[in-house]
Each structure stands twice: as structure tokens, then as C-alpha cells.
Length: 326
Length: 271
Figure (cartoon, chains in turn yellow, orange):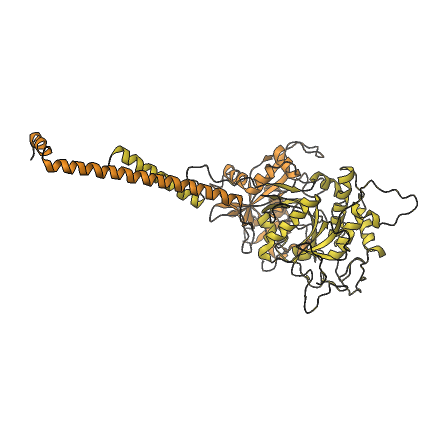
């Protein structure tokens, strides 16, 4: 074999090996494998969230949603007036709890009767030990900048600085199965981008409520749905309370894999948890033989949206459609 | 045996000329064939490259958990693997988040291995890596201070790690703010154990940091059944496992209490 032939053969073998390494995803002649930086952060201003949670941790065992409402409501004012401009400081949770128990909070279908466990608040439509998703939706709307027109105004009352709102809040029910958690997370991420404010999310099969301030995704969750979400920033109002939270620190950035698979995050579906977190007892969402479940069996969060003409009592599905049955 | 003269004579035979021409043609064909093979390999290589580029533009939607090879358990190798994870790179690359800012300002410290105590299937030992900063608003004592904790699942059998979470930066008022990691020193835990149990520590079993499969719903849920302040329910709240000389296991809680396994708030199926 001549020198030329040997060189041709060697070059062919080299390219063959390179081709195989590319196909196998292991660059033979490259540095040790490191993943690409995946996309960008999409979400809210975390400095605002940190300031707006000054009244945390949750002040009572079943006030995780109350504290979450406080954080998001504060944020909506901070967006308009700056980081230190927010209504709920120390004692803010008590004010929100009072509002959730006021007559203004009661749904168009009323409040279910007390069954020894719940309802925890007048705003509930289920006999829930604490807040149910409907009461959270009403609470965050009422307490946020978007809900100012709902408040009774007394003589001498001065409006906080705010603009006319073009958004409202509804419960959103993601009906995807556990194997499609990524779609639910992508839906939540899409809303984060659209509205640029944190989102209240029920986690741990409905037992707990947290605030998601943003996600890391490899593409824009709004323009390229479903985005590949790599990580989720979760703020837990339970951290620092006597029982602690579902995570070790107030803010934890969970890898997308962990958030999607951990039973303490969105790796579990809303459940009755005994009889502490049941489905609605009054209204159009009371389960029936055709639709035996409403929140139970799915993932539920409370998101801002533009359907200002749709009552806060109503829930939306993952497509943004108003649900007229469980 | 042929002589040089014979060889020259043989070369001038008519049949030999034909053979030489044939040999030249074969060699030419071999060069052409090898050139074609090389061309084919070059084309295949660039096709493979372009295919890979396209697949990177359209990643699979569901995250599967990304494992990164671990060269060794030396601190430098664990840190290198941590920095290679998507979670770390995403956070470090985007300083508009509070944690992104902390990563830019801070330093990753020495990784600490936290063992899973009586693990459930799927639970891993965890490398906990503190992120420290020298100056932290609200803390007057000299630094460095732990401001965040990066957790990596450790697959010992395959020598690989997977990023689970990055907790922090810790806010004033929350329990981890201004606290070291681990919260207790080994010496302090040993002293608490000795004072409480009044038994010698097994010489053959060194103290080790552990976390255990806890029933978080029972600890932290809205309907929590009991108060738990001992820690150990998360790797970031690791506690010291102590074995007494007579073979009994104890955990020294963050509340400075000593617990036997039966006293822990176990998750369902664990004990």
C-alpha cells in the first residue's frame, strides 16, 4: 500500500469515527460533555417578590394561600408604584383572611354548610379545611390592583395609585395526566410571560399553595408553546412557620425534572386528602355522574387572564376556555 | 536463486510489462476507491453534524433528568460536575434573578455528601454545595456566609450526579439566613449525643450527615399531625447520624435533641 493510500484510508477511518461519535452524542475529540446554557429566565421581578413577602411566613397553619395572595397582590402594586409600594405589610395576612370571610367574598352559589372540617372561609365553594381554588381566585383579584374597583369606597378614601386593569384572575385546571406534566408547566410558564407577574400554584396534591415567580426555559414559553422548561422558581410561604414548608428555603429553584416528578411539587395531582380538600359542594362544579371530578385528579393554579367579563367564580381549562361543568 | 541480471532480464519479458500495467491500473483503482470512501465519510460526517444541530433546535418536550458524569468524588470534580449541569448554568447565566446575582457574587464551597438514611426506592445520597458570600447585608459577623445551597443527586453506582434544586438566596427572617452548612459541627453533635444518651460512640462508624424520607404532609401540610423541629427532612437540613457502641442508631436534630429512628416522622413505606 502506498503512502497516499495509507493516508486516504486513515482519513476515511478518522471521519468514520467522528461521524459515529456525533451520532452517539459523544464528541470523541471534544472536552468533557457539558450541557448548553438552556434559554433564559422568564417571569417576574424577583426583587419585588422578595420585598412583597415581608409579612411571610404564613401566619396560620391553613393560611398558605392567604400568604400567597398577599405576595401576588403586593406585586401588582409594586409593578405600578415601585419596589416599596405595596399595601400588605405586617398584619396583611389577617386583613386578607378577614376579606375572605366577608360577604363580598361569597360566590354566586353561596357558601357550603359547615361539615365539621370546612369550609375554612366564606369564599370557599367546597367544604375545604382552608382556602379552595375558587376562594384563592377571588382573593387575589380582590386584593390586587386589578380588583380595586370591587372595593367599597368610604368618604375620604383615597385610591392608591393604579391604572385601569385589563386583566382578572381565574382558577385554571390542567387536565393533562402525570406523564404530561411538562404541558401543564408550559401552560403556567406561558402565563408568566404574558402577564409578567408571579402565579399562585397549588402543589403537593392540593395540600399546599406556593408562588411561582419564574421559569428557565429553552425558548419563549409564550411564543413557542409548549416550551421546554428547565427549572421553576418556587416561593414557599410555609418556610419559617412552625411546621416549616415543602422546601428547605423560602425560594428554591427546582430543576424541571424534580418539579415535574416530586409529589411535593407538581408530580402529584390535586386530591381530596381525606376530606380536607374536597371538590365543590355548591354551584355548577359539583361533581356528577358525567363529570365525577372538578379539581381532583388534575393540576390547579390561579392565573391572571384577560377575560375580565367572566366571573371569578368560573374556572378555565388549560386552553383558556370557560368551564361550564365540572 | 535469481541474480540482479536475471531480474533485469525478467523485467524485460513481454508478459511482465502487461502485469506491470495491470498492477498500475489496480493501484489507480485503489486510490480512486479510497478517495471515494473518504468523500463518503466526509459527507456522512457533515450530515450527522447538521442533523444534530437540527435536533438541538427542537429538544424533546418532557425533561428526563440530566445526569452528568463524575470523574471522582474529589471536591474539584464534584464542583466541575455541578457547574456542568443545566440548572447551574441557567442560573449563573441569568443574573436578573436573585439567585443568579448571588452566583455571580459568591463562591461555590466544598461539596458535602449527605447520605440518605433508610432511603425509599429512588432516593439518592446528595451532594450539597454551599454558595458563600463574604459580605451579606444584614449580617455583621465576618464572612464567608452561606447564602444558597445547590443539591445534586449522587448515583454512586454509575458515578454521576443530577441537579435537583438550588435553594436561596436566603432572605432575612427565614431559618437558613446566616446559618452555616451543616448547621451543626460534628463535634457539637457528638457532644449533644454523649450528653443525652450517655453511651460511647461506635469507633468503627464515623458520624455522617443524613436526611431521611419524611412525611412532609404530616410535618408541613395544612393538616399537619405533629410538630417537627428536628430537621433532616431535606438534604439542606441535614442532621448527624450517630451509632452508639452497642449498635443503636441515633440522629442529632437541629433542635439539639437526640432521636431514635422510631421517633422520626417517616414517609409512608419508610421506617
